[in-house]
Image (cartoon, rainbow, N blue to C red; front, side):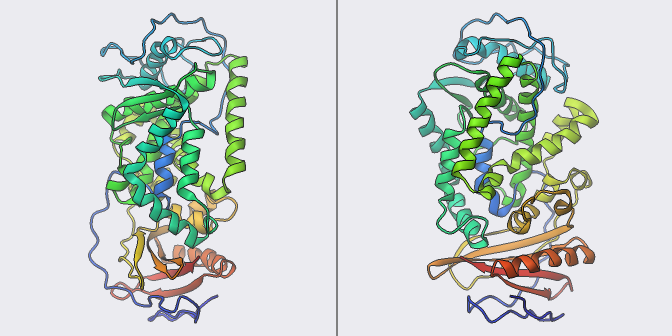
Length: 449
């Protein structure tokens, strides 16, 4: 349903909810945009889980020659000499790689895996994380427990997902992502305890690459503020994706380098296990929910590919010190390089108890209206300038209002042309209006479910 355009006053269709807010607070002067942090409002809960998931699905693999095995002393706690360094780039297959048995004990594999991570990241652990083997049930309980810090945000975000139609009403977003986190992984780095938890029972090639990934996050966490417990609780949520993407991108870059050392047999084994885990996710979760889980990894691959090509590991380190401040920056390396900030948007009011609110970022917009390929080049280049959203309780349902503006008049027109047909098909209320005080045209939508 589409309301008539009025250049000065919002005009909303006569449809539920009956108390759709039709006024805009006078804009306050914008605060300087954050230079570090990460993610997008309605994706906050999914980002927490994405940092946890060590499955590495979707990473490109390449075959490598067989390598002689390394001899490593047995240990259950990671430890290395603090002075060891290497200049081997992560885009190569280093001579120091190792071929291990198909399934190897954690303590036997660990020294070589730590050494590989240090060589790829060109720095040594100052305080190596404790690596703990856990029975599967204990592993799952610890991973779920580590999510508790952000439980309120996850529950609020789930209501927004449902109100906007990102997932169907009744979908257990929080429980589903928890299930993915515990069943889709075999290793997990917990930054609060500085521990890497590993499912006991020996490491397959896939398991070793998962441990490499988590060790990389542990090493980066010593120096760079991108792997943080409660990150999404402490920072604005449209800022959270950038940090999550860089953490995932750096870890995935080292993981991919490790997989390039696999023999053909190891590569097949690892891919088979990835395929099985991917098939489980496809069977259990709707497409948008799977995209929410993968979004930091997808963005991180894009950002780190460009960054590493320009300057190798030193450039990656510089990037980790200056995370994208908006989800648009996280999805578009050029905008990140320009440090293009978000256009300030006034907070939105609500006619009922507020469940969730914040910046409505580019990632939110694309997940909502982006069609079958939300992260296509054309979608990312829409010209998002800024946005805000609020979700409130409306009877037995939740309603979300979002307001977005382009980074220029032409960009707002493009966004309007994409949002309006989606609003009609999604039974959402749509209007355009001019914000008082600054004269900007904005696109305004309400949807309930």
